[in-house]
Image (cartoon, rainbow, N blue to C red):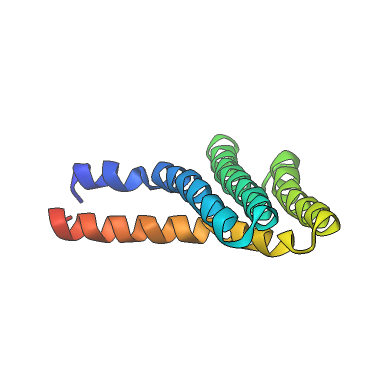
Length: 136
């Protein structure tokens, strides 16, 4: 494999993170104009939770892989497991708070939680375009 393509593909997580931020801002604006401030607020909360979830998942995988390399054990430490579970507690708390404030915003929250899917689709399209254009 070409060293240039290795560096290109290794930057995917950074590009996905940036795409999530950009898409979150754009789609929050679209939700505000189309569905009102409650849906936009719900979407923005969902986007923030989705971004934090993605970031913490990335950190958890890095910590787990580092612990395997350093200790040689394939079992995760308690801290890694607690952080993994905390992600879902945050999601549940956000959904509960949004539902109690405004049930209409819950749809925006769920749409915001799908933000990583949109960012990964953008990354896949970008990688496909780059592979075809550069012949990677």
